[in-house]
Image (cartoon, rainbow, N blue to C red; front, top):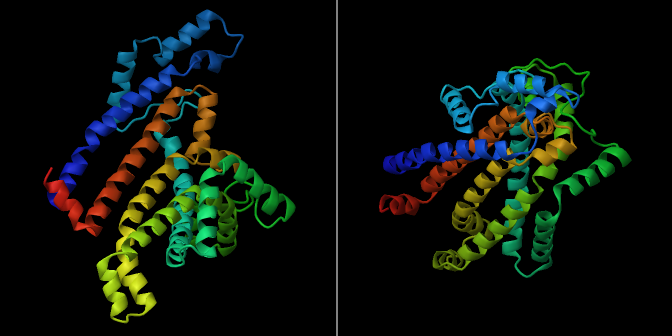
Length: 338
């Protein structure tokens, strides 16, 4: 197991290096001059060139990348061209909001998706199975921006059950301890603020978790059907064990092994792909901040944010690989034979 972990961790170095190169190259291919955007359309060419020199934009790309990589090794993502604040600080202020949203979305998707997959597999070719499969197909196919606007119109505008946007009512002041509002409100003993923060979280979390829910449900159903045909399951039925014991102990335990991988990968996608959801619901996370940074041509903020989200996705994949190896010893054996 130690050799397997060491090998997987060792792959992080070239992966993260490749990510830094790719991120830096793609950002510099985006049209638009940051200096021109900062000074405005009426700025003189001399003023633009002077600002480019101050920001180091007039240097060759390989020198700029060298400075960028040196800052990364020192834990510095540079300063935002727009706000002049450290990119790492701005990301640190917004990442808890993104993480909290993604975590609630994947919990919602996992609970509902695994339950739906179990019911569909156990009642194969029934109305329940057809409903789950049709719902999962709709969930995967439905555009997030359209679904987000639809639930806002229904639950916020028409019914008035849930808040329209934001993370918490601005009139509720909550001391910042962890950055996670649900935890901070509990630490402060503010149950009213906790309820308001939770209410703000329901719609964006459900919308963001729609696609992972559909994927998890289909994967759970497929894995359950595969395990149900195994000899040891038929033996368990022949012994007269209860349906609950057979499904939970013998079937679900083994069917969840591939589902763990799917849940982990979907969580990584949510952390890096919540941009549309955060924009629609005015959620103050990294995704919405990146959209504003792109509009301002703030390439340092963009490359720092994209690199961070990509690194988080890689780390989540690493954790999933390790959990998969713990759940299925055959993975460790196969890895040791490489």
